[in-house]
Amino acid sequence: MSHDVLNPTPEYLAFWRERHVCTLTTPRPDGTPHVVPVGVTYDPEAGLARVISNRHSKKVRNILAAQAGEPGEVGARVAVCQMEGRRWATLEGRAVIRTDEASVADAVARYAERYGRTPSPNPDRVVMEITLDRAMGRA
Image 1: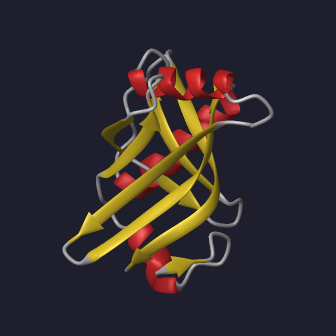
Image 2 (image 1 turned 120 degrees about the vertical axis):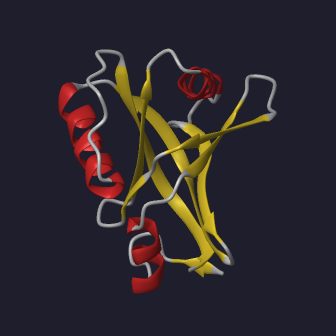
Image 3 (image 1 turned 45 degrees about the horizontal axis):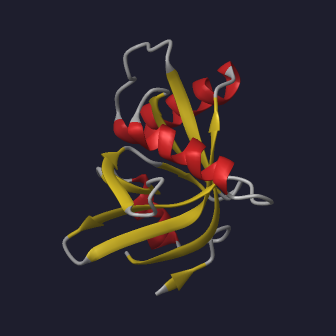
């Protein structure tokens, strides 16, 4: 079932606000999918999803490599997904890596709100900011 990224149903948005481990799928340089567990926050007002990570992680390297390899495109094509029983939700879009202090702090605050804990300080933390263009699921 398709959803409006900027105006999701109340049930779909509520599902994205519950505490769930999610997956992030990024393209490896050879084009194969790299899928890892992550925490995701969804901001429909801005049309964004955010994932915090260490700047040296494989997922960050994949996004940076894909960004560099797609002339004329901004960001790497990625998907985030979560499920619980028969409920599931996927968000797709283009991810860029943000390193500025304000973006990282905002992403950490959103993560803390959704997951109920503030991550330990990490000077190598970055945020994957995903500009969303597709939402699917059954929540």
